[in-house]
Length: 522
Image 1 (cartoon, rainbow, N blue to C red):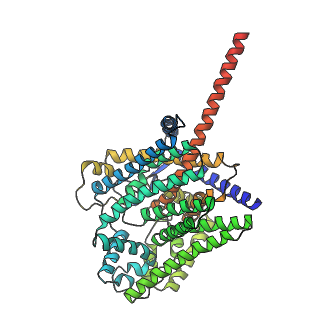
Image 2 (image 1 turned 90 degrees about the vertical axis):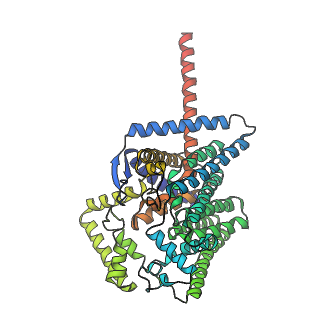
Image 3 (image 1 turned 120 degrees about the vertical axis):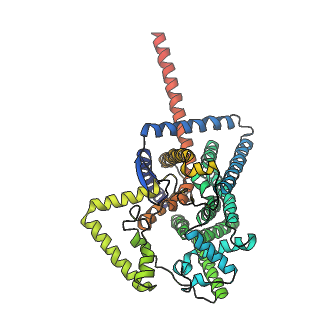
């Protein structure tokens, strides 16, 4: 039990530090992209009193509406379910409207994955080899899971039907909202916190705008939140079905998006520490099952495609190349993409993994030497790398989806480069600060409360994501999954904050009345 308590305190302290820094940066600065949409993040200052005033107003509005929903104990659950249904319908309505309004088409990596999936449907597996000019899956075999998903969608809805993927993303966004709601209910019995979460989820426009992105973002977030929901249910209530659901959802999230392995590692860490703290074997068996399902599913996926294509799947560009690039000055900001992967693996080493790895190690050494010789430069480098990813309130939702296949209407055009764009990016900036503040207060107020380590699953994943992306290639969109994971904790934290403010105001009111009575008596 001492180990579990120590683990809880350690994670809480790390979380407080991380969200204290995130809150501080978000209150004073923000990151934005020009509407010409070069992938270059810019920094600008925020007006602190305005940010605080907007956040305070948002919390006050949530408190007033939630008080009406919870005014009578009888029927509270029913009214919360009505609110849940309204938020889910809103999510579906807005995202489906956005798919048809934005008219976005897949480009870049999206287009390469779609082209690979369409080729597979036609018996063309050249993307797995050096025969095609792009060699996309030869270089990036970790995208095979996403390719398989798109191939399945094309098999059902027709080749090249990327809109089917986008509309399924709309369903995925609604599932994300619902999974987050279930997670919030497992984090706390405070019904006000449940309503706060739903209000926050209804305003998560960065996720909503990403439904047009024909890539792994929305599917991986959907499966990740489903996995967290199942994991917390399993840890709190038991049940083989919950564990099975967690294993399947986690494996799917990892197959679709490699970065979801951070979530799998979080599950394993929670289970391993719990096993040691409780001196029980069952959590270790659960952790082994989670790993086995993922490893088995990936092996099965690769085997199926090797048998279908007759091609042995290449290991692709060594992962250490992404670390080397993450330590270099990018085109837009430190650690951002600068073409290093293709230059090294395709150009200089001619697809020789050993030679490519050796070059990356040498380049990492050169970067480390530069940081050691100029510590101030190292601090500036990693501070800018951190803020360019985590302090972008849009998470590149417009920058990644601005290419359209046909003419848009005036509303969608304005959303990308007009007055609505200015308004929406401003709103998302204030919203981001509110979420960071909420998580910070959740960690602060619950620091000494007794809770299971599984309650920190989301936080451990976010901390892992922070550490990973400080080493890895940088992009704002990589942080979107962690931001969506913050919403349940933010809902609980803001609810606890309003409760304490209410108690404080009530106490002040009682004190004032007592002072007035004392004055009258005199």
